[in-house]
Image 1 (cartoon, rainbow, N blue to C red):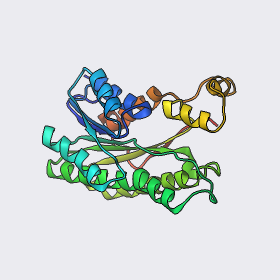
Image 2: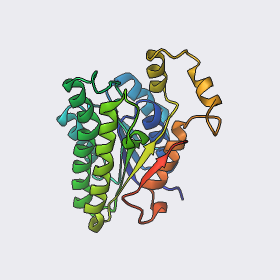
Image 3: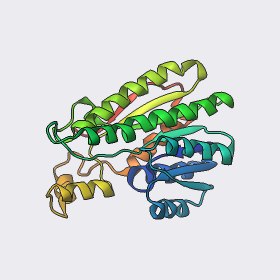
Image 4: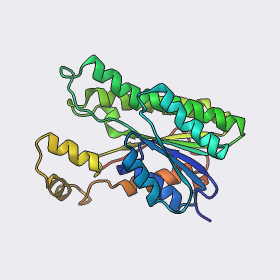
Length: 250
């Protein structure tokens, strides 16, 4: 028996990197159905086609839009009549110091990184309650919630907000037996991180140097996050709720 046998799972931000790896691993762990989403139709369909263990529905969605957030959960309900697990993985990491961050950028990051998970969680929990599902929600956060470098002012603030939201939801949903946990990611090797590093002036082989000075000889990989996420989603995690797990090297 696999960890997620029979479960219907929504994974946001799943067109590449961490989200795509989580979706794929959930299928490998026995999920009965997946709903994934993102803004890029081509990448989303590629991820959906690559997963063969269970039905996968890609929903094109811009999570900065309230209706698109609701559309993702509604589509899952339409297809499966239930949601057992939600992974809020989508996030924008646009850089900006205190001085450089515009009000528009601040609002955009909070819309995608904090408001969208709120809406997705709200809609998901309504279905879980309707169907009397003892569900599980995992929020992918960041170690930068504690502070973060000065050039990700707004991003760090969104993750701090999500940490509090995770704890609050976990407490609120105890009597519904719906568990809510978060993973505070450290430096992770993803396609988007490569783009960001090169834009910041780092050489194409920045990863070689970064991993050479890392205590474990490598950065966090998407599959590392996927395995931990699947554990938290599964019944193996028991009654664990309200946990914020630091998944980072020093």
